[in-house]
Image (cartoon, rainbow, N blue to C red; front, side):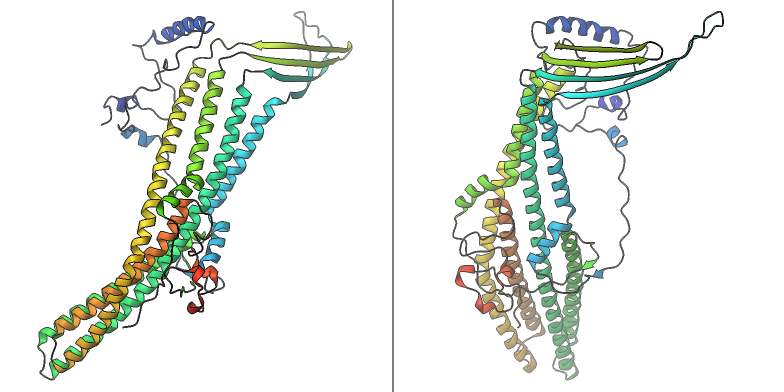
Length: 534
């Protein structure tokens, strides 16, 4: 729980703490501490864990404790409202899109890729700023002045017009490695931004693939529910006909009506879910959620294969995953920042040169020039440097913990996606067998019900069993597709390259969507997202 006393110490961001009547000695104590500390700086660094300004007051004393209070909510402005959306609109050309086409569109339109690219450009410019510290700085200043004075007796001295151009040069000669540490940190930041850019591309491609496969599965699920509604209507009509002929009770009619209402509800829900996921697909591509995108069908029938074992995929992920490499680069950057902060206590040596001229009306021209060395020794900077060192050390610890956490999450992601894929593939044969047998059983029960050898409950149960089997096949196929997409992202593969000679992420790219039987053995695909007709 948060410290109750910290509720009263919170104040809006940007305000200064006020010294009350009961705190008259607080500035004096800080001043005396600064004096004594400045004397000790000549012989060594001040303690980096000191906190004379009390910046850590009210913060958790150990990990695992909440840090925010109710007063913090009043210091953060609320975001603006988003513009209202209109009804769904069809895509401009109204043609079916493949996964490869949607992926290429997403890389151009998705704002996440633009953010990552802009961040990379900014980090590259930061490296240039750090490299510029090795060059001298030249500055030209020109001052123009007009002055007039009046004596106490009322006499006016003639106006004096002065022009003073000045050319100055400053060059940092030696700083005990501070510039090198800054450049190392900037270079590591560029490398981290490059991996972050690749990681963003992976996330965008994975989100597009997942939404694409989900939308295809939603279309299958809608077709299955529509077939179930047709079957339920047929059962209702059969029950009503038998009831009119006196061969069935009214209970059969009620049960058939209940089953039809349930099938109608399932269909309506599936349609709404499909619209929901189509909005997610449009958003991942970078289009408004109201865009209705037509999807090209996937008609691949061969089951996929993965020649690599899970341990081989784990090794590839550790070597190639850009998110993990980004975390390691952040550790290097944080270590360089700490090195710079620790060297900020050391003196610096600079070269300065100046060439000036003063042109004054009536007095002619005066020229001055100088050159010299300046040794700067930081004695006391208001505790700024020791706070910088403490902050840099804490950020290094944070980046190391983030790297270790990323390592664990990367391994876990590969492990889970690999076995999720294997589980979906292993479950497909039994699901297809259940679907085939359920279809045959339904035909038999329908024939038996018409002649009175089966009850309405038997008929409804057979219909429900077939629908459930069809949904299971579609869900297992969806799981196989999405697990492959997530597995590729977890390993660190950009785009849709093959895992092995017997597996690809993007079956549409092979050109087999129009002729499933032409799929070569070396390009085996995930199972089709198509329901079988009962």
